[in-house]
Image 1: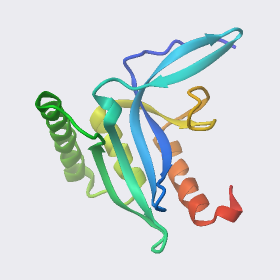
Image 2 (image 1 turned 90 degrees about the horizontal axis):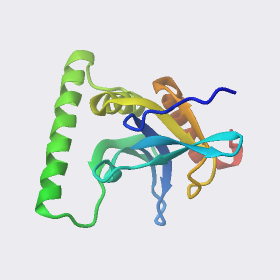
Image 3 (image 1 turned 30 degrees about the vertical axis):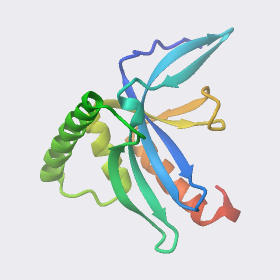
Length: 168
């Protein structure tokens, strides 16, 4: 198998399901960069975040009673920041918001969280999407996909969360 070189500047969105101790479930996409890691005769892809995009994500909360994703948004998650970092966050969120507004003007308001994620990806220059194949704390083993794959991952995750006995 031919090994594919990865551009470490390329941005991918990593799909994650976050289950909070109080019962809330969030579907999240966060920007990551990829790098090749040689593991003997096998190519392994590992993901890492950079300093600023590490706290950024695009997420929706699953409302199990209404059986739908609600409160779609993009934001930074952090406990504390100094003024310089806060200004960088503000500039970054403003730029993303302006691009999202232009896309909404062109295509209308997104009807699904998948459409919202696709626009977020467009706004930050994403080249692909990732889904972890292994448990959360292992950094190796991803499925690489496109916008259509990410929409399928969202639908599948919602179905599995609403029907835990029927995992697909």
